[in-house]
Picture 1 (cartoon, rainbow, N blue to C red):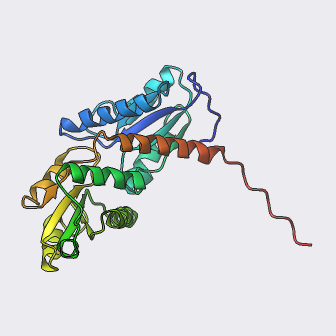
Picture 2: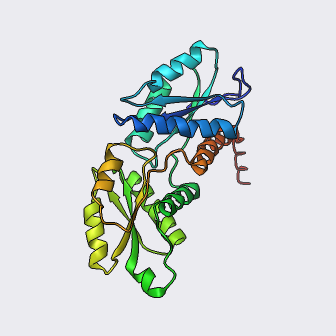
Length: 262
């Protein structure tokens, strides 16, 4: 990651949102809708999209195009929900090969704005906070995520589940589509074994795709099954927050050395 002044022709680094990519045609459409919200919130900020795989434009092509157009720096904002191989290895590796200086922002999660978005999607799906002690004892939520072998990724999902538990007032159990356990079906069964018979599904995915669809299909009898995060205004605010956070990090002055002992 290279430190440099805010020196694009537009007066600030371009924001490049980095999406995973999906064979589901709804995914790129949803991501573009999210970026339209970002542009509406920050007129004049150059906002671009690059995919890691499966969809055009791929991230290297986006960065090459920015360089060819004379844009001199960029901040890459992963549209990913925690630390994993893509965030730790793939995106920094691609950034290092770009011909323009780049900063890499933190992934979107965990963050309270994600929790707000998850809450809104649950309410849209019909979930209502239980208002009685018996209702709270019977209720729970499964947070369906993609899954990763990286322990930091699972830690980040767990932190989001804890934040959502505090927001909802009922237990939230993470579950995974791949590479980690429990699965959605296993999580629902575990909750019901504890007397949590009113289980809702929160979809911890940026956009529709294979894993989000499989997780929803594994929970056909839930009290509510929420949509992915999608082009939500709070998610757009979070993208801009990560962009600004990355700029602040590189602007921070170096600490003064400690005085030598007398």
